[in-house]
Image 1: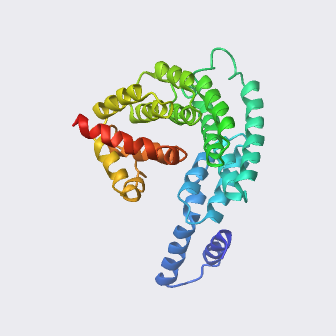
Image 2: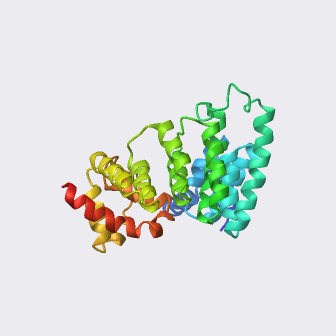
Image 3: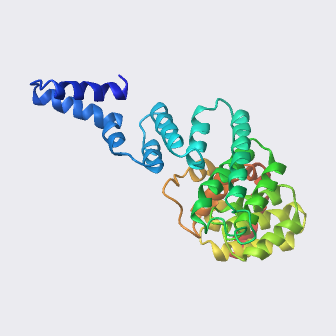
Length: 293
């Protein structure tokens, strides 16, 4: 039964002053609640409908609400992204759709003055640019998942140009991509820019120098990783001992605890391409970590 038909039934029975049992009333109320009709009656803004889409019971219902949000705000990039994700049939077509949307959004950003010198570098600090950044971050994720790594690097570098504070964590994906291509200069430049001793920087850097054959430098970053993340040895040991499935499938739905094994899980969740090139390094790193205990 379509949602608007549920409303029609209730309106008709009320208009006709029909005397129907409390069970029937309750059944209609339950059906309306399950179908989101009560929320729909109260929704006013595009973000009301987007919130309903996020919690919808089905993709069909989510698409309906996202389209309604887009109808209310045609330049709402959160809504446009959701509609594209739900209604597009393949990753390649979704990439094309994102590229079309980004082109449209670029024109709007230009029109509204957000590509001025005063705004570039501070996009997340400007509330109106956040949906645009979220959409481009999703596009970056799609590029990585489709193994279009060179395009992903260009996109990540552009996102960091637009938002130097990097509220979306793009720098971590970019570091992993630099390591994939063994780009020492770019990796060090990024590390120097953000100056943080996180697992998502130190693990890739140690891996980078292992791949470059500079074991001394790799060991130095590995030592810093061990100092920064208390679960470093536990992670390497689990990976070497064949427990990677248990470790890497840990649920991080509600976020991760900094400086714990969760950071390793998050690293490989975001940069799955690192895992195949890390096998030898993890074996080597485990042997070195044992001597550091």
